[in-house]
Image 1 (cartoon, rainbow, N blue to C red):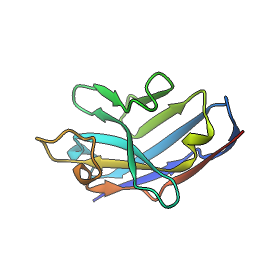
Image 2: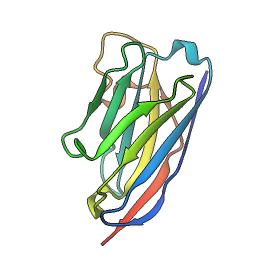
Image 3: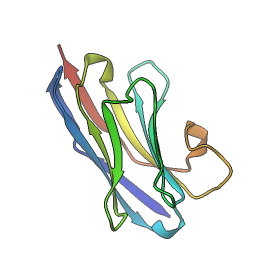
Length: 125
């Protein structure tokens, strides 16, 4: 089992910044990739970005590229999402996810087996 707990969400005005954290515990040795997703009410869960744990290559969705940055601390116990230049369109529940399998892109919801409970981000005009 792998447990994921998100934190760092909150309310911020447009143009502001937030850093989300995802604490990882359990059988973390098995994790191959991790990702961030977000979901607004009544909409589908969209991919935000991912990181390959082994080679540390990161990927970001076009909607956040240049504003959001994914990183991981040296002990691999925490995944971060640094969010800058936030807009109201970024308002959503943000979820952390992890997977142990190979052969997929780590960019789709179905690519991830483990999920956190989410942390709310609200951006006002």
